[in-house]
Length: 181
Image 1 (cartoon, helix red, strand yellow):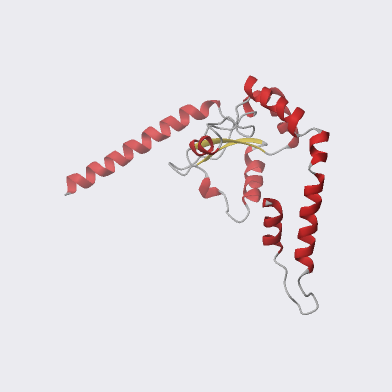
Image 2: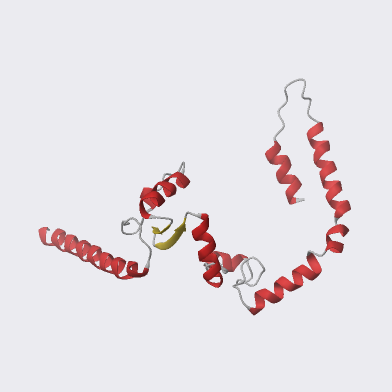
């Protein structure tokens, strides 16, 4: 029994050492940032009610460009406008595509729709087709009567309520039905 406990503690210690070694070897090329815990990274340092304030506090300590691990995913946090302009100007193509997650591939025709296609020749072709055919002024104007009809229906829905008696209008449901058609 004691040998089993000792072996399990030893295996946990070895996993922790290997993880630390891997973390230090991969962090060599990353900007400064707070050290994270195994598996959860820096998630414990972000307050769920105001993560933007936690990131601001961390940026005051580690600078406008810092690295965090959100779970096991290394993340680059840019907290100044000047640094963001510089990064996006020099490394624009690296940030032009979204990561290829399995769920996104399932919902986006294996990453072939305009929202999730990686930047490249196919993306440029899709964008050209959308600009010429879907978002042209003539096409947008052709849908004007439908948009006006939807807005009129939403106004009618809101005006049905008796405001004098204190009836409450649920704008969330009304706006959702307006947006979904």
